Image (cartoon, rainbow, N blue to C red; front, side, top):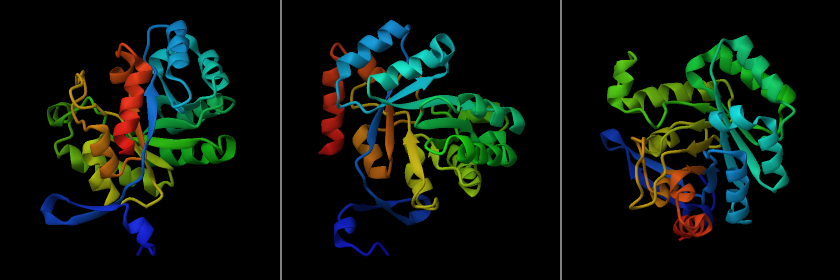
Length: 256
């Protein structure tokens, strides 16, 4: 199936529900720093401290609304790649037009909510191909702050795993490039999604870290072996006395 003993060395078999075995190709995931800080100045100071070992930075809704495109250009000028995590969610035309408005920004990844539906996702995929060909479009499934109880409260009565799977399948059927899910769903998604689908996982907490508002989490090494391509990590680095040291320790863990 894989045609190479070298690749087979990087495969790991894990049990899924029902006793099935999922074979996952294990790659070393890239770290994305969630730049959720109080000001642009704080963001700039932090990025200057992290050094060249940090390649990706996530800009979320709070930071983008506060600082706008200027923050995106600042991060680009510091030599970093940008994950713009706006989680667009609206009617299809508005989502496509929002992407048009963002198309002049140097972003490497952009998120949309898969629950916006098939038509909206198709419009976004086409807009991306036309106007943002170098941007990886990511479909957000179920937020990592939500658990079974939270899903039930908004009318979703099935297991979290099933809902994530449905939304991920919907998204990849529209030719979206990647999925955002918690690390707890990684093995399940890797068992049926196209092999070239990129998976970005928030909810990553090194051993001993404060969980914050995250409900479905893993350590960096666990997420690596479950098949993650990118790990979004914020507070364990942002709140560290020495952010560069904290980042180095995480990189050492996933490269071990």
